[in-house]
Image (cartoon, rainbow, N blue to C red):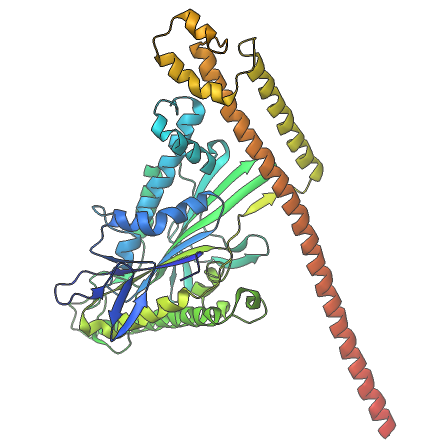
Length: 500
């Protein structure tokens, strides 16, 4: 498994009937061994989040598109893994808590209400958090949809069903007319999420008392603005409806399971239609993955991939073979009676790992090049000013980084004032010490911003050049094709006239 952009995990539902033959990252069934990045058996929800999803969430905070989705038969634990329960929250609640905790932690440090130097062991970790989230201009927006019988519904506004899938050359796939909220706190985001979950379509089957009858996609849009540059990313959680076989007992059980009257027939027909549409969309998903796993990344643009065959694969186009980090969690039940479904799930997961995704940081740069140059100039001037402030703090000699690292040790020892003055003539003052630390951190941050802006400027110029180059190439091809058509038509006319 060499594809680091895609990670595939397997979660096995605990069973008292049969214990599977597993190791940390492999499972053996029917004399065949299947390998994964990690296998979870009797693992708790926190462990699954930490192992499978936490790194992906950090990548989303850094500007990469990321998708997590669960695949498996009905009742194998997909919704429990993604959504969880009140007592055992799943990946989505853990993610919301994680990003808002990092956000407010960084907010306290930036505002000065929390001193990052107070605990030396956490100092580097705090600085890393600050780099991941720039609190001043960061927003978290969210939307939640379900795909039911090939129609997209808005779970944050259940009366809406006019959502349209659109595609943008720079931002990729997006949804038009979808309801988007911007929660300010973890509590607000969880209220939003749990309220929407209650609107999801479920039904009872023999596998699962509350089976999901639709595919659900919960998306967090993260945007960070720095001057003329906007960094954005999508973090999506996909809870697929369970794969089932038509004609089995569970498909003939309606919403009103206790009813024996003729009025139950239409309900059975509805369930059969649901199952048919679920299986059809999963079939198209498998077809897309099969096509992608058989070609290289360079061939992807040249070969037709049937993304538009279903709403699910169209929405997941960026996640499958596109600009996205992907995590897939397969869920299975080890009982022998479900062996057919289990083998189908394992086969599906094997194909996913062969897909070639190519994630890139998503940025938008203001088209005004002069403004970008002025922004870089402004940062250089600010950097120079801060350097001058460091030099003038003690009105004596410049204090270098090594001296500052030693200041706290000097402070803690029982030296007389004369001894301290003899130590490189540095006059130690509490306020000066804190000021030096703060200024040095600010200088480091500005240097990084300058470096990023310069890189983005060059990337922007390069992208615009490539874009125009591609457009010119397309126009040339179009005119050549039209000329060939006209020449062929003229040749045919000449041949006809000669025959006459």
